[in-house]
Structure formats: structure tokens, C-alpha cells
Image 1: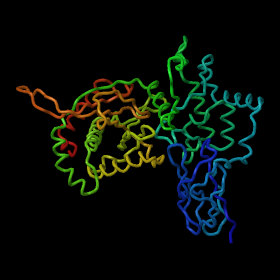
Image 2: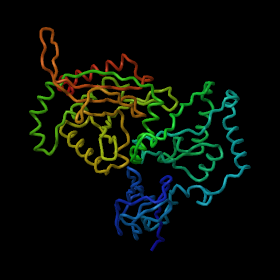
Image 3: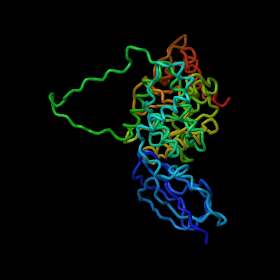
Image 4: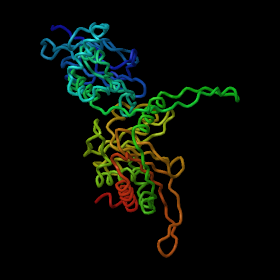
Length: 448
């Protein structure tokens, strides 16, 4: 029998004990390279761990409920064909032994690293000799990333190189296989930071609010925020500070839409789906995004290019017992009303049950926050970066509308579209909202 290969937990970020919630293979199973074998749950999301080799699982060393950390052995496998296995692609053992990752960075190494960094970006330093911005920033906690945290995947030598230059790896985009960060990525990140304009003098920090001893005025209760609120709160704060928001308001006449929905609601229920007004709003949004693709885009990292997406993945805010979550429905343009209604109901249920995976929260191109089931009319939703726009939907109500001769009773739906003013100007924002209004007024136009 060929030697058995240890399949270990790779670099999963700064987590020491992550629970296994699903084991996807059994002893004797044949697996392909990069096939998922277990699922871990950390914070509010889940992550799948693949096998780095193809072969047969001979010994399974974990079970559902076990807690593991980086480097723990998941299983023993026999490589396909009984041949020697390729070097395991574990984040901690690619270029140097794992002990290298823990080697202390001495003052001499720091000095040498900074000298090396200076030589890498010598030309940039010459341009900005007196204005070098801080390389360490606060990374936004995006809800569409795993557990709200961007984990950096890099070898020990690259991690040490980054420490010597004072670079936070979570801020660096990896160009290697599966997003792995290379030494060149760190060098390019440093060069980009050095080339940034010097911050204006006079200070631009945000003043803190005063600290108050509330107990002086009466009884209080100190309740800790849920993990979801902590993570999403940091992300929303970053979005609000970094994006110049503008909100456009309008009301859509959905009288005919509601008649059509009620006429088909019973037929939809027989197929096991709930045909809600939000389903039609989602389809109308996609039709409007096709007309105005700038709102289905993201700004490039250097803020000089617009990345327009030709896919339509809509994030829908769901109110859960632990806070607001935004699962993503993919390829909405390719799905009919009933299929979309079924998927919306299913993903909303999983959100409320805390069963969403990291994949469910990633890849959105536009978000919708619907408060119609709760109440209220207009509000100012915060853009969910890196998206550039978000739609807020209020509660529809019957009200009189002047038709030129008399007032007619119409069912009106409040719409609030917030957008990044660097990408969407007022005229474009108004055109988008007007087009969305027309789509909702006659939902048949969505099919054209």
C-alpha cells in the first residue's frame, strides 16, 4: 500500500477553534483534487475545506461537532494511482517549514525589509519624498465576505515580507492561484500607497462623541450587540464614510401589478411558493439595471475605472433574530417569477435560521432593502460597498392620484434609491428611478 497522505486544515484566518458542521465524505470514498470534504462554521457564515489531492479516503479523523484549527489532520488519503502525492498546498507549508512563520522579526530584518521596499518603489518615493501615507488601514467588514472578514492567503515567506514592510495582508488583493498573495502583490500594494496623494494638512479625523456615565441619570441595562450587528455595523460605518451618498425618492403605481399578483397567488401556492410583491420588484430592478448598467457596477481599487458586470446577483436584506443579513440571489435575469419566488422564500428562511453559508453572502451586484412588511414609507438605505446603489422599498398604500380630470384611487409604492455620487450623477439616478417606476406600473414590460 502506498504511503498515506495527511489532509490538514489550511490557513483559515485568525481562528483557533472552528466547529465542523458537516462531513461531506466517508472512509473509502474517492475524492478529486480540490473537492470539498468538510464544512466549518465560524461567526455567522460557513466555509468548505477542500482536499489538496485526488485519491481515496482511508481514515477519517474528524466528525460533526469537532473543533479544529489550522494544521489539524482531517483525514488520511491514498493518492490516486498509489503514486506519491504532490506537496500539500497548505497555507503554512508552501515555501518554508511552518516554523518560519513564527520567526520573530528583528530590528535588523525590519531595517533590511524597509530598505528592500524602498528599492522596489524608488521611483515612486522620488515623486513623494516628503509625503508617505500610513500603510496600515482599517479593512471594511463586508457582509459578503466570509464571516465579515477578509482572510489573507499567503505563504510564510510572503507573510514575513509583508510584516517587514508594515503591510496588512488583509488589504492586499492576491493574484496567485485561488487568490493567493504573492510577493509581487505586496510590492505593488506598497507602490500604490506611496503614489497616493499626500493627505491634506489640518487633520481630517472624525471627532469622537463624548463619553457619558448614564447611570447618573437612572437605571440602565448593558446589552451586548449580536455578532452580526458588530460585523455589519463596521461595514456600514465604512460605507457611510467612504461613499458620497445621494438618495432619490419616487412612488410607483402598482395597482395593476397587485391585481395580477393576486390573480396568480393561488396558482403559485399550489406549486409551493409565495408570490410576494418583492418578487416583482426584484425583476423590475434587473430590467432597469440592464437599461442603466452603471448601477450594476463597482469602482476599481484605484477609483479610476468602472467595473460593469454583465451578471445580475441581487442581495435582499432579511430581518433575522440576530440582526440584518443580506443573502444574494444569483442570475435573477435568467429566472422566472415563480422560480424566483421559491428561491427568495428558501434563502430568507435559511437566513432566519442562521443556516447561510459564506457563498450565500457573496457576489452581489445590487441590493434591495424592503421594509414594506413592517411599515413606513421613504428612508435612506446605505449603499452596500463595493456595490454602487441600493433600493429601499416602503409600505404600499392606497391614495388619490390626479389623472388630469379627477382623482383616482391608486396603490402607490414608495421607492428610495441611494447611490454612490462618484459613479451615478443626479440625472442618471433620476432616469433609473423613473424607468423602475414604469416597469412596476406595467410589469409586462419586464418581459420585453
